[in-house]
Image (cartoon, rainbow, N blue to C red; front, side):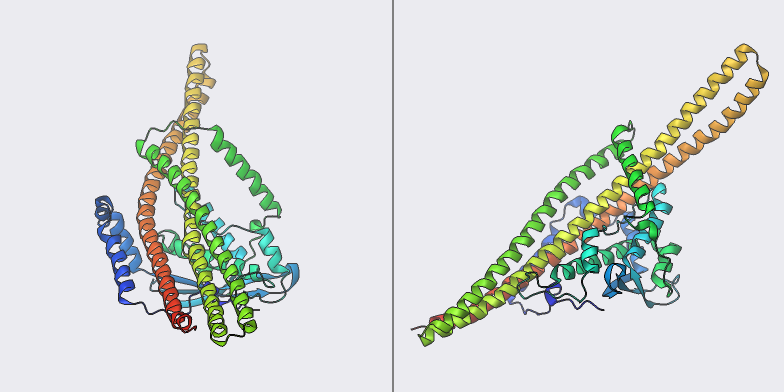
Length: 450
């Protein structure tokens, strides 16, 4: 059962912009480049950007389409068609498609986290589970459709839920595909290529035993983050940690504002729908022919404006708000690698404490002239010296990897944010241009009233 989404999620009406609007668009493009701070302009030629440019030459483009509800009732699930196009030689084909369910995506994220988080890699976050949304979707027996004014027809909320999840899953996979290490992972390649159904990732279920255990582990991790404070000796990490915290606070405020703006525009669209119906009813009741005709055209105008405002709402939400939400998730992933570095530091410090303790034991044994204890302590000292050395190497390695990952993240973030803002502005300029055209077309009708 395929979900036939209403064009509310896509912009199907092309708008031919006049020269003034086109000029404004060119101005935005130029300003985005010429007004960039010197540090940003210089960073475009940085080694990490050269590395990113090389990565993009090995391209992977992933598109998720055709969400299908398979089965009925609580045992049903939604499968997504994952289409991959690539020129990378590690894949057997240049284009291939597979069906994957939501738990498969969570399972992939879990595998990547287990493999690479400890080494300091920033793992793009998978979309959050929603027990309420999933349960409502399971109980919906027919594909949902969106009513014209965006109000809730049967299952309209489910349509929005599936589309929101589809878009989030697509962004997740493409972020993994853009990472030079994660994109060549065997589990990621199997996820994209394997025609067979993947083993069900039961550990990702919120209600499973593994899910409960994972919840307890998260609580323990949270307590550890709160109770343990590492004495930071690297000013780079101290400054970057403060910057990440400040960025997170700003993004949370922006996300709340964008979400509220999208809701207000959707509400305005609904009120415009009511105005259109009222004008249509009034045109039928008014005996004055020119006025009745003008009211009828007013109703038609409000219907067009209603759809336009709904598109504006979707631009606010899907183009900007969801993008900001993604980056809040990525900041959470950055905090995870910071905490992983703290855990490596804790292990290193623990090894140093144990080494000091073993040396004290050896000194006591020598004073007591106990040869068997001296030999045992000497062997333990050798063992813990190796652990201390290994701990320092792990700490230095994860610190180095995190620095490179964050440098890369900064450059990618700049590119992504610029792309999102340009699309956001371009879409709204199209909306404004179309609104002007609607009103210009209505003006002769209003002037014809006598």
